[in-house]
Length: 136
Image (cartoon, rainbow, N blue to C red):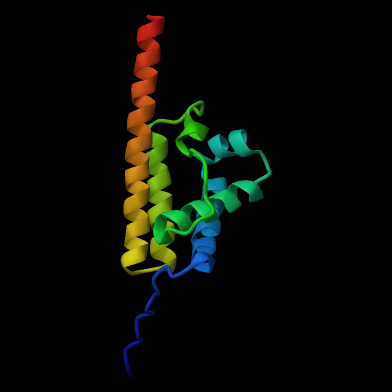
């Protein structure tokens, strides 16, 4: 009996692929008991505008496409998030990419997500420490 062939996954190639991973990722986020409530508190039930911005964001990050403008970090400043939340975000993101894609662009998406998380955590911790210094 012949061995079953491994399914060869494709790399992220375009905006349609970005929509696949963004939608699948946020489906996981919505169900996650740790980070889901943070997103629902910030977004409510009006997810489509957020998803549309994320499609444009990742298209810009991965393919240098025009269409995204804004300051993603600023949207996170007031949220009750810590390293633990970003760790979960990264885990779900990597699982989502790995479930749908394989290749250099898929790896780049995971690398960029990790870098974004590190920068956001570092900046948030710095801002909170600075604010604590002014209060204390």
